[in-house]
Each structure stands twice: as C-alpha cells, then as structure tokens.
Image (cartoon, protein in one colour):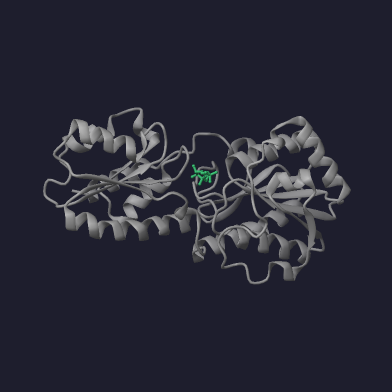
Length: 326
Ligand code: F6P
C-alpha cells in the first residue's frame, strides 16, 4: 500500500452534535502523527467541486462545544454516479489526498464503501448520526445529545399534557430506526414508544388502548418514531380521532430541533476517542472500516457490516418501558 502522507476529512449527510469534536480529534491526531490534513467542505459535493483547504491545529480551535459541522454537510446525488465519483477521485489526487476520514451516517458510509472499492482509496468512517442506526457500534456520535434534547422537550410537553389531561403523540427522528423513540421514552417517563422495529408485527396503538393506558392517570405521552411503518404521530392521531374519539389528542413533531445544540459530554468524549482512533486505524493499515464502540472499547467494523439495515433494538428496553408505565 502506498504510504499515506495527506488525509482528507469530510462530514456528510445529516449533521449531528459532536461532529465538530470529531473533526478536531481527527485533525489534531493526524497532525500529531505527522500527516497533513485537507478539509473538504460540503461533504462529497465539495470533493467533486473542489472546496478543499489545508487544516492546521488552529483551524479546529474552539469548536469542541459547537453543534453542527464547521465543514458544512450535504446529501450529494452526483456522488452516487460513476461520473461524480471519477471527478471526486481526480480532485482528491490533485490535492495529494491519499486517504479519507468520512464522518456521517448510513448513506455516507455506503458511498464511502463504493468509492473505496472503485478507486482503492483507504477510507475510515466515523458514525456521525443522531439515529444510532449503524450496526457494530453501541453509540453513534450525536445520538446522546439528541436523546437529551428529546427528554428536555418531553419534560415541557408533559406540563401542558397533564394540565389539560390530554394524550400527546410526540414524533421523533430516527429515519427507519426506533432508538431515539424507545430510549427517549424511557428517559422522559413516557407511557409508550411506537417504533418501526415492531410495528409490522402488532397493532401497537390498538394494544395501548386495549391495555387501558392512562386509565389511572390524567395525561399520556407516547413517543412515535418517524416512519411510514409507524404511521407517524399525525397518522396515529388521525386513527385515535376516528377509532377512539374519547381521547383528547394532540401532536408535536420535534423535527430538526433534535439535530442542533451543543454536544453532551458523552458525545464529545465519544467523538474525540473515535477521531483519534480513525488515525490509529490508518496507521495500522486499516481501510474501509467504521470506528465503533462496543462495551466501551473501540472496534473496527467493516463498512459492509456497518451499513446493514438491521441493527437490533434491545427487546428488554421495551419490557422496561412497559413495566415502568403502569
Ligand atoms: O439521519 C439523520 C436524520 O435527522 C433522520 O433522523 C431524518 O429522517 C433525516 O436525517 C432528515 O433529513 P433532512 O434534514 O435532510 O430532512
């Protein structure tokens, strides 16, 4: 393998709190180990359109606490085409970039996998997404902050839900995964979570109503994972209005609120450890792996495994939620 001298770094897909801490850790660890760092703006798009500058240690000063990504991000259609990837490769070579660190979610790492196979480029991925849906890592960067934001919001909604004795469906992000909904529900003391992982198996709404949730209480909060499978909070509220008209139902969609804000200590530490580990991985000759954390240890997860669509939900969490909401 050719010796790596210059490492390119980019963030791609939906931003996540802690991405800046990861950019800082990658940049400083790379410089510490004698590499040059090239910062690529706007994800894969910037690799195609040549938005690249060299980063020194001071370029990443004072960012560990900032949400979003100083490198900007994009979802880039051109990179899904062979022509787009050829252009990206040419720009990479022009800048003398020998290896890439890609910080992003499922789509970004899938793109990295294709690119790495096509052009034999060493790439290391960092799991940057609030969804926590990447296989092989217990946590993704941004997930803990988003969970805390959800908890903060639900605490406030509970005040009005209790005052009016209402049923609230609160929709949270997660794309096709229910981690934010399920753990957000446990953290905020919600009565239930409706998640795509089990929605096809049972009618979760009918179950909730049948089991008489909220009979002894004067408000109900149900976290709903955004997904066509769950029907979303709007869909469920519509069903309640027609099928169970006795409930006074309201909907809150938390939306992009969940992606912003200063990262929690946990996300900053995770991002810092993973960023440093990305450089260790390249030094060890690793390529086409995502850095993961498993039982608090850093692990290397091959891209093919990381982007598998079936990261499992721990069923004991559902049972805990059920037990604690009686
Ligand atoms: O993957 C992160 C995420 O926030 C998902 O939870 C959500 O479905 C999606 O991105 C929203 O994407 P956008 O900001 O492009 O609308």
